Image 1 (cartoon, rainbow, N blue to C red):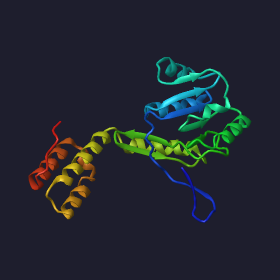
Image 2 (spheres, rainbow, N blue to C red):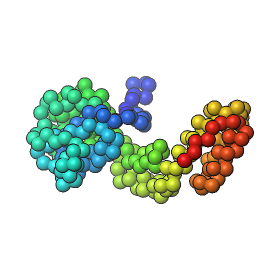
Image 3 (cartoon, one colour):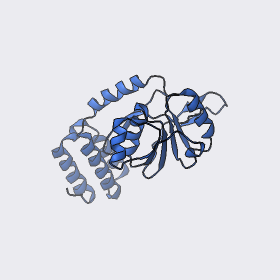
Image 4 (cartoon, rainbow, N blue to C red):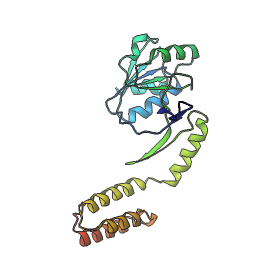
Length: 220
């Protein structure tokens, strides 16, 4: 998302997490860029509509599976009216410019070619359950963002899904425990040690919190 810097100067970008489940997303274009966007939003259970006379094979499969809707035609001005998020991803800059000019009332606009009229960058991202890691260069170098994502995926292996669930469970336990604020903070810091990726250590500290503070343990 974009905002002014408070002095009426250069536009700065801040990162936000947005719940897109059941939100209406219109993607204008049916090429590889549109495909990438559609796959991201499909994972988030958004209501996706593709507007394009042609689509990629992968998009055709998503359409066949019922994951997205396809309007098999060229863009029309009223296509943008129902969008919560609009992706402008045609191969023609003039067409993209025209669509952007018509999208003034759309809350979120991603212009894939980096031209004027967009207020949203789609970051390179990956998830490990509740952990979501994303990075954007604000369109300067998508390849750099992709490289950083790949490096972080190695740094945070799939085991982090269960680890973050463990951290969440312990945090809820500590909230309801009789421990002091200082004791709770010490536990929260202690559990950030990488050794707590091990399930055995997770069980031990949950028992410890339960015994000291009386919090209920959620059994698997």
